[in-house]
Length: 421
Image (cartoon, rainbow, N blue to C red; front, side, top):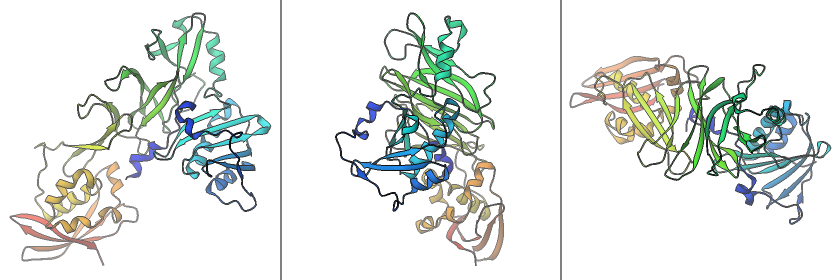
């Protein structure tokens, strides 16, 4: 798996506590295991130390998989410090292998429940004193002063939860707010005032701005979802997707080119099965002018799939004419061998060549920023066989490779690959 494809997986999402009820514990019903702090050694301890968190006591529940950390936080639980808590939660979750845990600061009367998904390695819920609106007090104050819908910057409206009342997605970023986050809330008129139903948590962490908001169905059920599309500072395009759970919006997917800031991400039914997919679109300045689409169901169910489109003039795979072009084509394909496997098989003399991991020797991620810069040096050339040394320019820790090429039916094929001496 490539790093760029998964940076966006490190997401803080808000899920209802009942959704992960099996991950919560009752201190009254289960006797804890008390950790000896003098001998305690764990990656979370290093996270606490680096963030200035003092650990006073550690209790373990659920056979040691659910820790309660009694701590003294280095910051006050104020709205202005929300980002510090989020960073601490994210680092702690990763260090704890995405097992759920609690942070308890008794001096501030703050209990932070962090419910995670170990399988998908994500934080699913962060509840402070039982609510996901703990840091939303300034918006609550602002909303209390609103009496007319026209006073709100409405980006979308619909009966999201099917109760025959309209919900409104409103943009709430002020001119004084210089952060990169896109601030959106869902509100509803309850007959006497507007009530805050929850903030649409922004999981994108590169410079970006709001493009538009859609309230739509993702599958053949009657369930409405909220899709927030955003534009990045470098031209990237992507979205956050929210599901309605027990009267509140819950982030279930974030797909944005956080790694490079470029590329398109969107929701589309790629395989025409009636279910929209979360799509990653990559276009490359490579020999075949590939556009590669990776996609999976919006809800994460099922395998990841791919589709390859050729943007060259023939609109299909065209066999390279020279030995150097065959090598270049094969190296470029090695970035996504699962997608280009059929193409790669055509370029080799035997399937054994495919076992050599080009990705271990060449910095293929440079394809994200333009064509690979490769230098070719012919070492020998006789009787339809040619040895060519290939060196990448500008790659990080890349190594020179030696390709042995042979001709077959008028086409150059790769017979073997090895590290150059």
